[in-house]
Amino acid sequence: MSPGSTEPSAMTSSYLEKALQIKQRSWQRRHARYRADLPVKARVLRAEGYVEIMGRCSDVGHGGMGIVLTEEVPSGEVLSLEFQLPNRTEASVVRAIVRYRKGFTHGVEFLGLSAEQQEMISAFCKGLAAIG
Image (cartoon, rainbow, N blue to C red; front, side, top):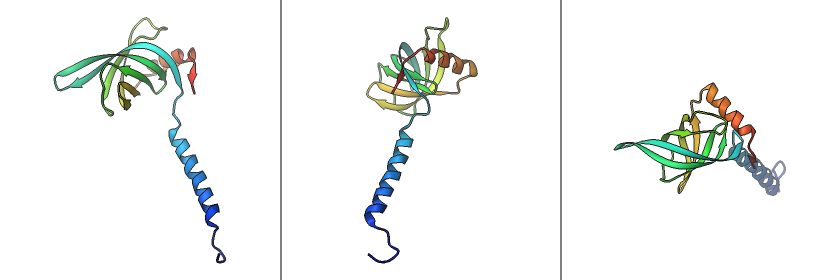
């Protein structure tokens, strides 16, 4: 090995550690998720007009929710979601975008929540079990 060169195994090890740290950071969620089981009504705009799709929420967090719908909705599609939290007398209606889909399972991100909606979701999440 010539003077000033770095041993390949040391470079590779350091590079791999850094790459792993970056990958782990990219997979971290911005918001904790909490187990929930709520009926959800989704409305999506299609060529024939608004279509109502029924589903169930499996988890919720400050940034969105996991839902299983009776139809597949493509990633990037914007939905209107209606659901009623147990601690509320009125149903909540929020806008969300589909960020993940695998079959009928969808991960959605809430869009433009009001301060009242954020507080309502926060209060609901306080009584739920966090998901790893």
